Length: 72
Image 1 (cartoon, rainbow, N blue to C red):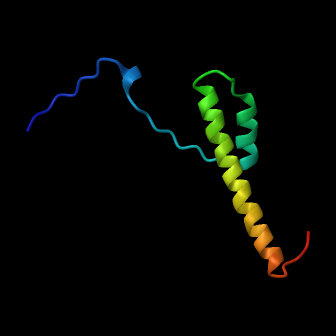
Image 2 (image 1 turned 60 degrees about the vertical axis):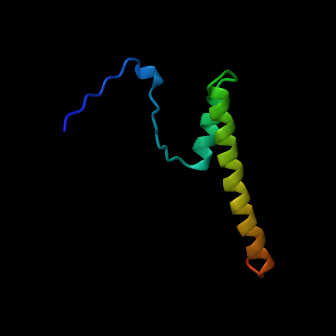
Image 3 (image 1 turned 30 degrees about the vertical axis):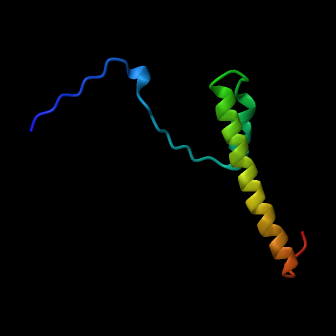
C-alpha cells in the first residue's frame, strides 16, 4: 500500500496542547489574556475551569463540614 500526505496550508490543521498548571497559575494566565479573539475564548474556558475547580473544592468542603469535619 502506498499513500501520499499533502498539506497545502498548515494554518488549517487542528492542533491539541495539554497544559497542567495549578489553579492559581490558570488565574494568572487568564489575567494576561486580551479581550480579542481567540484570547477571549481561551480566557472564558479558563474561567470555566477555575469555577469548576472551586465548585468541586467548596462542595467537598461543605460536605466535610456537614459531616462534622474540622472547622477552619
